[in-house]
Length: 224
Image (tube, rainbow, N blue to C red):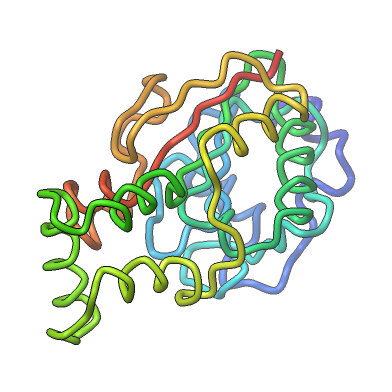
């Protein structure tokens, strides 16, 4: 264990979970010089990452990221958060981003994947478009409602799934920049800017790569 980790009294706080952060670190983290953290992992358990979620899951640790994160500053090489930030309100997201910035080391990277307001606006405004038709066919299968409309599909992204806030690209980019991040890259979900994140997205395995790219955007930001 590196000295800065050993010196953090709160780093390995025992939390109510199936696996503690200490066990994750001891059993699954081989590269202890490049620690990587996933917030809101769900069933997307990434080898070599510290996987955390507010919902209990085998081999993941309980972590409420609306509270200060139980980690020392400047220790993580990367943090990944997929289809999670939209489940908390905007002030909570601002606080979470600030905490991620704090725990990342200089040069560390943060990847956020979330539904895109622009993408769903285009779906709403182009009901006869090819992308909209494809997405509506998917949504009808996914929802089990063959009569679902474009309006139903768009409203679902706002009012179902426990969503609290759907972000515009510039809105989320500015939140990252205001927290101190630099070099924010924006891309479709499933695409990657830095290789440290290659293959981490899990939502495409649930809804398919094409629908994942239609729904979501990804932002990768560097701690200055």
